[in-house]
Image (cartoon, rainbow, N blue to C red; front, side, top):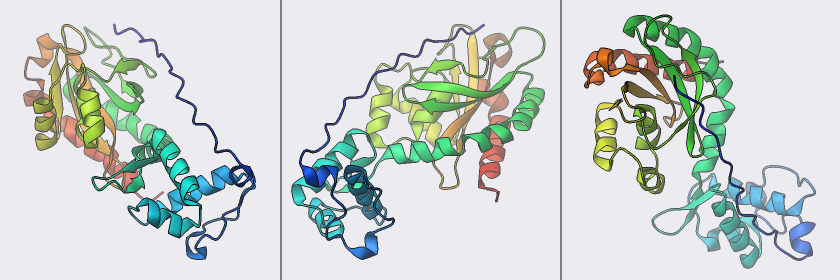
Length: 274
């Protein structure tokens, strides 16, 4: 029986709002009217930060290009862009230009979670019946992966992971899947103190599924495959898990095909018109 890990929350560093009346009450200044998406809300800092994100939707931009597109003063544009980067809403590309950050994709993925959960039930039941093992869907939440849906093996020795269980991102085939397709910086961060290596993640990307044997918990093996949103980003992992005695030390040889097929079914469900 897998116990519930305690989630420790770390309060993010607070980014001090820019001082001066232009940061508190100001509108969008002389911004290019073609890039204005909405009427000002009356909260100047939020309006300006949102305007920067709107501009980056068109692609990477240098600080000078942001200033030109938004009409913001250069110090203001720089201060807000750096603050957005602190919260991963903005990032930098290899040329140092500002781009939309990974946090936006994570938030967009979370917005589709209800649809994922709704589709997961029958897919996990079928996967459990085909493999004879407990099946799960995991989503990443910060430094944890959360079980958002599961179908347990009804009898016999099994790996029981209730919905809501929080597991480490440092071990297990689902963690491998959720990290393997991350951008370079987050991949390096995910490998820090992990029980899997960069070579393992390279193999996961190449073959499209992951396996682990005793990595998360002694005596437990698992196989996982990625679920993607309509834009192709990996947003979840489908897994089966159970005792090594049944799954063997090469669980992927037994079950990678059906696990990958289950992941494809969920991916297609998310792409289907609502």
